[in-house]
Image (tube, rainbow, N blue to C red; front, side, top):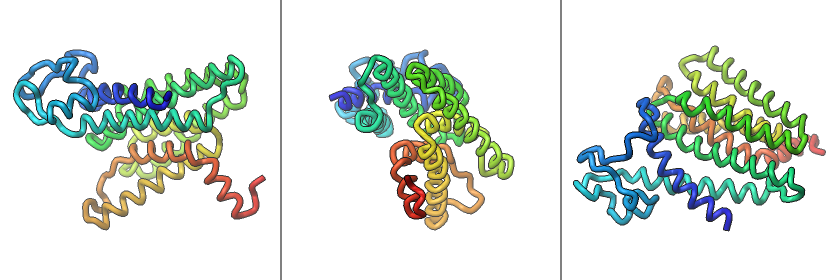
Length: 273
């Protein structure tokens, strides 16, 4: 039930993310003016702004002028809802600690932090695909939100080594991407560098295995995607391909599968405990 409830809440967040994805790259306010049809200017009523349902009921068209509404809107709402539900299930199975009040509070803070990261992941991936940018208006506050929530979770449980590791991981991944950007400025933007610090913060909070697998997976997934595009003749060797989405995919892959993958790799060499 919690996963379903958070999934529904995620679809509501997805509706807001549609506004964020459109307005933030254009340096517009995400709260004013209210959403309206781009063709006729009619303000969108509350009953026409229900995630998923309104698009289906309107058959993908503006109620006032019949202007087609992109299917991307309900897909973002659905995708965000599924992402929130997935985070809830992952937390319930692997992270939730319902012991004393301190650990329960820490678990709630962690859950909120990773739900925030899920929402940010959707927004940044779409913006990077659309504009090849990762806006500071989203990446910058993510340091504060992640640092405060995850840091507070470590402080409450007196996990001082975890607190140090978390910020060290952020610095390490930021430094790695910074070096890559200096070596290959055409292949790596500074937006990727700044995003790397955020992802390092989250992954290092989970553990070293998640950090290493998450960082490595970004290059694997991004490289495979680039190869597919070249083979399909959709891109050349010098084409600019957004890397932010693959950093995010790699980070979540590392968060969810980092521990078993690292253990399996080490066992090949007889190094696992």
